[in-house]
Image (cartoon, rainbow, N blue to C red; front, side, top):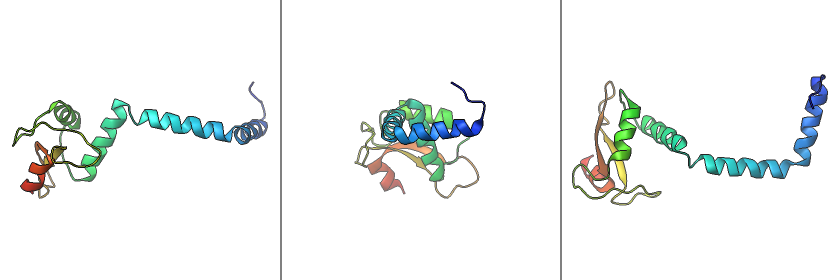
Length: 118
């Protein structure tokens, strides 16, 4: 039921929040947990990580598609995995750190080959 006076609406909203604080916080936690698993959130997070690490690309959408479709290391041909912690087979986006003014993506490698290539 809408209130004509915005101050009354604020008071009612504050009262509701105080009364249901724990319930609201639990709902927010659950939403965030589910949101983190969505493909769009995963893509957004991955692209922000690449950009923060210095990857330069003309078309990040195409690069991400290529990254997700790649299953084997471009050098040693081992099967790539996506792990929370880096292992030898963790999928990595290799780029040239010395190039800062044009696209610098090189390959999609396993972590072992990426570390050797530096």
